[in-house]
Length: 380
Image (cartoon, rainbow, N blue to C red; front, side):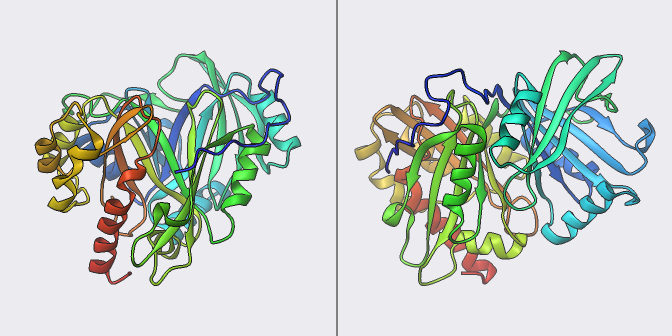
């Protein structure tokens, strides 16, 4: 693992021209938003808080907003594709399956952030505009990123509604039990071969992000497949975007498989921060979430190099949770299998104890586990 030092951004020594406050929402286009909302409430323990649809005057789409701690997911499906937005969402699901359309970012000043991004080469999709209702005013703007993904820039400092104007509050429809995660830790994007550095440069230039980590060569390689990854993040490390591209290898990598079945670049997985990964995994398994398996041999020597962790090695072995340690501390992590029929989007649960890494020590075990699943699907 190489901690790269990115070139100093143009604003070095000055006030940050693109400050961010964190992730505002991860927005999904799905085939059936009602069913998706039920799945994430029951399996991921998220709380339904807001809705927009025909009953609220939205004749074209239905959207459900779910939260867990600071994390917010929005699931939208098309009711009747009669406008450009409806046709886009319907086409997105047809081409990509269920997937992420928007990684929305909270910023203190949408106008300044949008102006800076566009002046540095971002493609603007929607200029800054206000939405209002009896709960106040939200300011929004949109810029494009890889594939058909976008970043909505959001300032909700003058708004106290459930989500956005046009949404109504909802009572939870299922009992979810204890909260299973606290926040979005990072969101991983897959891009085509040869384009990772292009998108890394995009985040440097457009948002003033810098490189946090870099994984190349043998860092992420098995006997059969390989990939390369760089992590860009804002200065506060509240927003972290690893970017992956495939590498030339003997067989098809997980990135190749994703790009084939998703139909192009997009969000591959979302890491969810938890303060009790054991309780989270037990509850999610009980609710039907499938996690990648890890062979017993991984745990035979784990204690020798990872040292003491909050969770005993035998409990890690029982639940197939991975562990990694670096100079700053350690982390515990586990990955779900894809959460839809296409082998595309999946999730990571991560519990950090000082470490700000991404589990480099686990890459070989993780990607071999993914390859076993690829082989079962006939895609390796």
